[in-house]
Length: 166
Image (cartoon, rainbow, N blue to C red; front, side):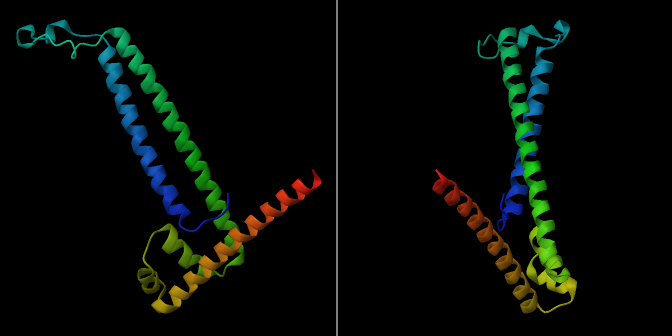
C-alpha cells in the first residue's frame, strides 16, 4: 500500500462509518434475539390488538432474520478489522517517512494531517509564521508524492522485467 495524500483522513472516516454500522447491526441482532425469546402472555392486552398479518412474524422468519443479521454483523466486523489493518500499515508508512523528514516536518505533518488541525493552528502552536508552516507542509506533500512515484516506478519495473522474461 503506497502512502497517499489525505488517505489517513478517508481511512478514519471509513472506520467511523464501519463502527457505526456494526453497532446498528449488533443492536438489530439484539432486538431480534429479544423478539425471538420467551414471551409473557399476561403482558399482552388482546382487546387493543387488531389483526394485521404484517405485524405478526413467525418463528421461522425471526430465525432467518437473526441468521442474516448475524452474517451482517460478522461482515461488518471483518470489514472493520481490514480497515484497522490498513490504518496500521499507513501508520507504518508514516514511521518510514519520519526517517526522511526533520522533526519540525513530522510535527507539522502529524498535527495537520493526523490531528486535522489547520495550518494556521499548527503555526500558532509551534510558534512559527503561517507561510513558513505552509512551505513545510508543501515539502512534506512533495516527499509523499515522490515516494508514491518511486513505488509506482519500482512496481512498473518489476512488471516490465517479468513480461520481458516471458
